Image 1 (cartoon, rainbow, N blue to C red):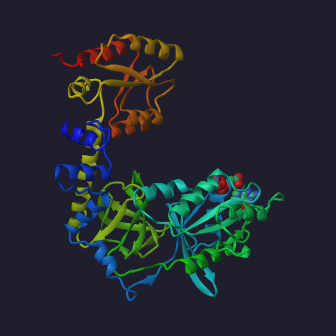
Image 2 (cartoon, helix red, strand yellow):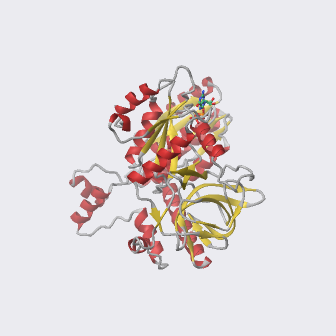
Image 3 (cartoon, rainbow, N blue to C red):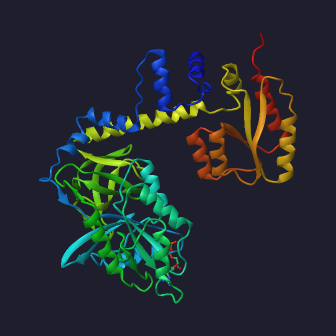
Length: 478
Ligand code: GDP
């Protein structure tokens, strides 16, 4: 309670269960005469690596021009729904399968690499095979920046739409240069000039108007001008970015997709960002680790090694990493295992901390006695609206006394959804399900977030449980 008092003196309204921002912590520390160090997840990772003599920053600083080699750009395709992102990714891939590797079976592993000729030189480009800015943003949220260039697809018969703007905002926020693919120019109503005008208003000024954004008119359906688009990507990469990496060291990169396969175990696609990954290397990806048992490319062909900007499917991890998890290979498998174990423990602690904060019917009186809470928040879901209303009415009629309150923050008809769980997370609520069950993924989410769900098929039992929780939680009287 004394911390709360200090905070209030500092002009900060606070309760004991609230989390504080870094600045407030610093103020608090100063007031109490302590030096407060807020450890960010990045710092934690760095310390973890340093404890194994892996210093990524020193490594990056030591990489002078002498060890760096050019690497292909990594491209994400973004744009409004139905403007042709998927079709364009397929068109590029089908017209540009790397010579000599044709004949394999196309595998969607989350990314692919193609080769194209620009000014008489063979150049490679890596495409992330999951279109849209959601994946891009999810990876960035996890600290992974994999995209060098964004291709913004805009349908010439439709024009700039909400997700077009969202996508370009995301790319610009990440400082990623944009190439515009004006798609569907085969359609009679296509108006590519209109798109140029519209995007100019968002700061994407076409080169032909004196700006620095390349616009290419394409048709993904008729494979029109796909080569021009690839040229524009390479030229933008050469002009705006100096893409290089040291291929001669242990591999580092990002997991971009992963799943559990019945026969093959954990299968994860990783994008190598620097160094070279070999079959037989020990690696750690997020909290998963193992030895690379085999690697496959986007044509299902087995590969022995993968250098910078190369996506490969990796077999041999003990579990499934998450998209956006960083990976690195280590000289010894023991190191990979220890890093994975530390990360697992860190994940577990974060999870437990999260769970401890959540309320359950059983822990409610304790939380009240500790002065942490005085309101029981409920979300009620039922199979029919009559039942939901009846349950809510009865619950609100419970005589709770003066010290505590009951609040129904949301009610509805139908199965318990992820949205209900998210709401419960934000408002620290318990979910009451009357004759409804959650989908499997919803149960997983609730488990992970520590949200309690209680299921009833008799209204009286629900009322009884809530009432005993409320009665049990009455604060002791003095
Ligand atoms: P996404 O939602 O952006 O991934 O869009 P899709 O690639 O699924 O394409 C949406 C629809 O537009 C599909 O019916 C495609 O066949 C069609 N489409 C895509 N590109 C073209 C094109 O260049 N010309 C025409 N006429 N239709 C296209």
